Length: 397
Length: 232
Image 1: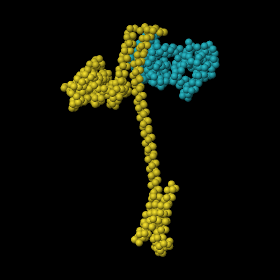
Image 2: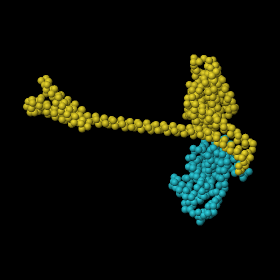
Image 3: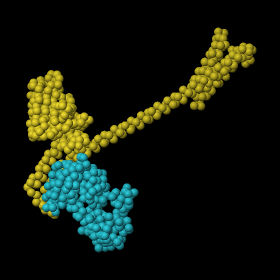
Image 4: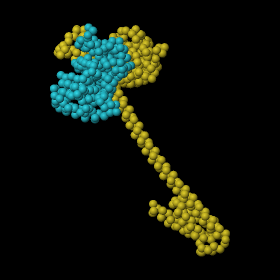
């Protein structure tokens, strides 16, 4: 810094000296006004580059040079004419004022620059802090989600386990005849075993669901696409759902001459089954479950399963597709309804989306009940001829 | 049949209530089941059971709420069914006055043992406390007037606080007592967070009454509190 300001003074003296020399050489063609302006220019240059103090020095040197070389009598510091005194004084005042003003402007600019840098630094710091905070928030959210999922999973594993353990220890108690031997009647014994049987199935279903979900999430859902008929897919699902739809009416509305679809029939049938299962679970006995299949465009099939149950609130219609979300347990629906594993719709969504289809929920006919709708592209006939595809899958599966 | 103890089971899981109903019935209890806290509370008012077994997480009125409502009107023993991971709720339930807990999944023997202990305690509890001058429980004999204590027939010397602590334990034999409950009962509400206090006193008391290094009277319930077993 000291070196730099020292430079300013040297440059001030040198540049004024140099200008004077040049002006002297071409001296005969310039008048006093031109000389004073040229020297003034020097002062301004020094002021903007090195600040007000070197500019002051430049002003004084310039004034001396102006007097010595350009105001008669030349070569002396004396001045003959009075108006030249005034010119010299005017020059000095102008030079000093201009020098000081531009020096101050330079300082201001420097201060502004420092301020700007400071603001930039603060802004960067703030942005970093904000980013860190939002990153931490995201982490916290994902941790929260994880632990909520873990809670849901452990609950679903533990509940059947608890019933199984309680049943089996009751049976063991009887056989071993502990401190207070009891005799179970045949009916009770059968009931305990039924519970064990049913709850083992429930565990097994839950675990299968978990595996399926994990596969979908890892993008490892292996679709075995082949050309199939919508009616067949629906009837397979209906057959499987027969035991659970006994207490319901089933109304089948399938459009005539639907085009063949290139899908994984087993997977799509699973989707239809899940939707029928939900419809049966969440609608009153004796009500009707409606199955609809129709064209929804040039290469699009739309299927829907509709029930006459209580329906799903608007704000839950997206969330029911989240894994482990159960509207009857998690969604503040206070009616006591049987609840599922919270995986059926998540798996259905995964399967539909793997087929490039879409799935969503609307109200049923007349704004009542639930209608789950999904679409399936019919598939590109040019890729593989129907017969060929079918034959190939037969061979390879 | 009316001398059969009545047990009310409150759980939203139908399969479990099915098993408990059958299991408890076969051991000579009369059983009713309710699917949530609200139904449980109504069944209690209607039927006056001798013991309530309740799940914690339930729709409508949950287990905690049920404990609170029951304690407002009755001293009926309450056993809480809890799961691992529900420790906080479990402690809350015990603080609200639940007597014991069983962690899911559980064997029926464990539940039956807790049921028997709770019913036994409920039967001996209504002793006339005001006129009672001695306490006899298992290996312990306490004279409340002279503040003398005999353990296994041998007199021991306790500081006043240790004496109060032991008497409180004996009076609540078998019941799970949370840190908070003990601190509030012996030191008052300002001390309920001072678990260290309690640990020191329990340590001293154990040194004076326990025959071995492994406690047999004052049992630790990890993260929750203590349970007192007076011995035979």
